Amino acid sequence: MKVSFLMPTQVFLEENAVEKQAALLQTYGRKAMLVTGKSSAKRSGAYDEIVTVLQEEGLSFVLFDKVENNPSLETVLAGAALAKESGVDFVIGIGGGSPLDAAKAIAVLAVNDLDTEELLNNTFTHALPIIAVPTTAGTGSEVTPYSVLVKKDIETKISFGNEWTFPKLALIDPKYTEAVPIKTILFTAVDAFTHSFEGYLSKRATPLSDALAMSAMEVFGQCLPALRNNEFSSELREKLMYVSLIGGIVITHTGVTSVHGMGYCYTYYQGIPHGQANAFLLRSYLDYVKEYQKEKIQRAMNSMGFFEIEDFLSQIEYLIGRPRELTTEEIATYTVKTMIQARSLANTAGDVTEEVVASLWAKTNPVSSI
Ligand code: NAP
Ligand code: FE
View 1 (cartoon, helix red, strand yellow):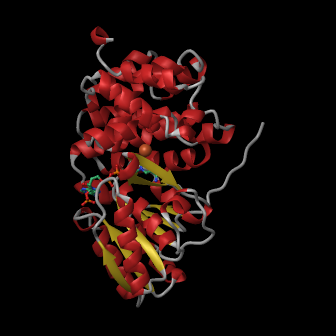
View 2: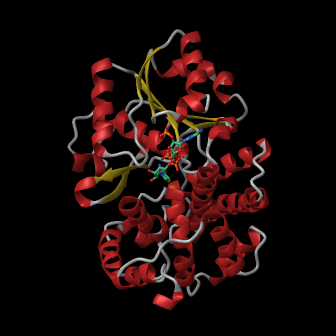
């Protein structure tokens, strides 16, 4: 048995986490940069709470609120330029995975002179301290070292990260998700679930990551009836934040699989949100990996209260929908782009060659057209 484990983020998942842990902020310096998307940091209430505690602690800040969904390299470079110019000591990401991932890249670029390749190859050994305040329950980015960025020249998303890009502190308050639109709640919930599910089936899974993944999948299973009925109680929000948090810890140790590796194509070419993209790929993924991981898949299904894979997939498709049919040209392009995601493919059961990837894409189409 081989187990190694690193989780250097101090985590607080609790009601009013920001207010309760306010005193910790000054550990990181005198001036912060707040990194947010266009409006949700404010709509969620998280921005106001952070600003209030910064003021109470006598700390100053600058705001960078230009992070788009699926942040680009260009955006984080602009953020880093502002961070340098303003002489900030630490970075606070507030939002969904997009602002949190952008905050990590900005924290690195603000104190390192790196070209794009050096950044993406993790050629750095320091970064500004990062604090993460999630407003969606999905990516778990608050506890992962990963930052996923759009790289336009190669038409896909690329992730980077090392020990320096773990947030130092994660302040997780489920109430921030109250303003999230229903569809986004569903998509992000499935993203959180896929982290544990893919991590559980990853070639890098360990008994410790499996135990965490099992716990998250069980709780996700408990959430399904309420998600189906659109009953968004505070208890549900708390559970989804837990699933997201644990999913982040799991993928930090196991990586993701072909589901995430392929999903980036849906997002890049069709603008499909990250969690929905992952959900669209679960059917063809399970059809492929069930040959290799029958028992583990059965245990995962049982943990969520399912006995048949088909019942599980019907449930996911009821919540998320199904993808549109791809043309032969799209399958060819998506296959080539998926091969860039070598790490995710290497974590996937079996031997995921280019031919396998092409067949996985083909299988996303309705049976009649295969
Ligand atoms: P997101 O792209 O951060 O946000 C999606 C949408 O939800 C945005 O329009 C955002 O508005 C809105 N929103 C966020 N919080 C809200 C709230 N509390 N109330 C109302 N609206 C809210 O979505 P995400 O799914 O959380 O993150 C996806 C990104 O994370 C992708 O780029 C994905 O690749 C990455 N990801 C990273 C990791 C990791 O380990 N680092 C893991 C999985 C995925 P605003 O634009 O106004 O903010
Ligand atoms: Fe994800």
